[in-house]
Length: 197
Image 1: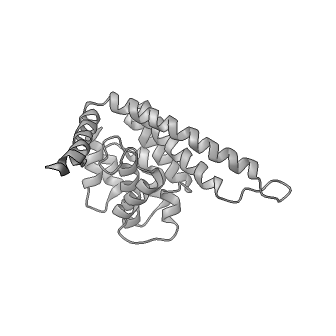
Image 2: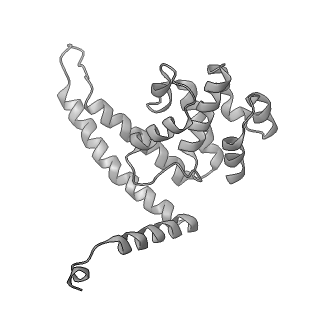
Image 3: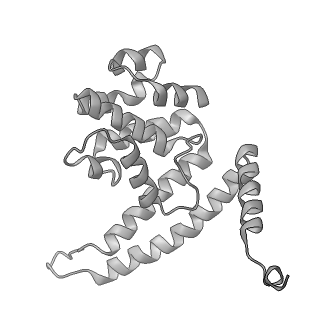
């Protein structure tokens, strides 16, 4: 799985259709190739999906707030600003993007990773809906639903933490990375006895 990821993020030419056919991934990205005819925009969209939803991506930071993480990735891949693209990609407001994300997650064949990504996006949606205007059929604001969505976001946070832990336990590279981070954190802490010398 590392190879397709690396090939996509390092591809510099403009013939995405031919390139995706060559590496046998055209079926996965076909919906966005049709939805984004501008080559530079398509390049940003494909790279965004691959950076955001790949297990091997160095841009995904476990334990970082998901919208902030996705926004950083969005800023990293954007060659030029385009109206509506943030909503399409970061907030998943475009059906073609959602379709590609799910196909890309399926292609990686890792159920834990797939579920982790799905829950992160669901939590983001619940958080946003908790602060958005949700109307009842009568036209008044549905505070009960807003509260429920906030509760769901809290529950999803724990589910995400559990899946991240499972992912770390089952991936030797991630396990080593976490150990290195913990060692670095321990070394960087200031101790009272250090001032007494």
